[in-house]
Image 1 (cartoon, each protein chain N blue to C red):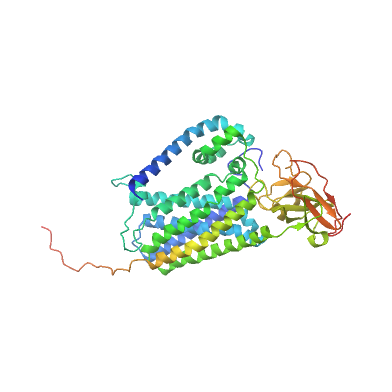
Image 2 (cartoon, helix red, strand yellow):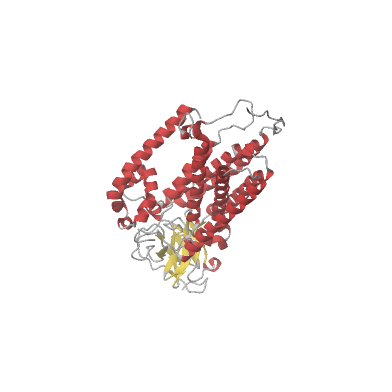
Length: 356
Length: 124
């Protein structure tokens, strides 16, 4: 949420996180370079730069991709989401250095333009091993995707592409990840015999994919949960007040009409709104009420529970739904109210499970 | 890939970037403020930061400039979760196969050669 776009909305937490990131990268690269040179004194600076940036980008990509499912599976990992975009931009820059250096080192000063040489390089002969397979195009594909994602990481893009388009674009990170694994499998793994390198590819990949599959299955179970039919036409029954165990100022995610909504108890009244924050689709139902507004747990964007509007001067709006309590059960209308319609909500007492 | 294909790809990419660079000038001058109030008084650093994206995504921004802000899709989050599920399950099946094939199909390690120790004749 910003009235005026600036390059980076610095906060003390972002500064500390970035300092930690740069320090860890510098220390890690220095340690790795020292060990590498000690083992093989003939290593050149060019080789160190190529391998160092590749290792750093590969490791950082795994950290970045692990944050999402970790935060979904365990809320204690949520703070890692706050500055993930800076990690992504840093990783893209490392990959850009690696790709540029490799293209210049191995494909410049030839009889063809460097980029043409890089994309068309193939020493693969029929019946031979995979050594010589064209691994460079996979790296180029991954680099294009990562640079595009880094170039669109600012809030300006979230706002003007729309949350859906922006998120869909950034799902391409999985295409980039597959391309990078192919790049390493057909490239470095063909020439480097060290079992350590194979292990550094296999185990992080297995761990990362396992995390994502586990998180995806958990989310699929929530989406597939059957809705309870309600006698009131157009409403879904999301459960008994007593069972929902609502707490004043805290949210809960419910499924209505196949969509997730955030159900909040605010000042003794129940309100329902879209669960997807307009910023990056964060789960509003997992947040809390701060300064009278529903606050997204990912990046702190806020919306009034009564009408779904952001507090002035901000203008983001989320859909709200009518809530009714009948015979101790909470009913939520499937169709949203017209945008920014003010609703007083369904009265209940502050103690969970009792209707007023 | 064949060299003519590589050249064509690079030609198209170059044309796209060139159009994007020209579009970026016009967008910074007129379009950005029209599309986004918060960008009207945006800092210089912000404008520099978003320029690469403007160059790369100029067709999308041109459409937004002409037709207005993006619509909100209420079914969006569920669709994206389904897409994520499909992508990770596909990767979970394909990548282990790829890595296993790459490791199994490696050429056998050839013995390292060493130069014979032959004394050189002095250069006259």
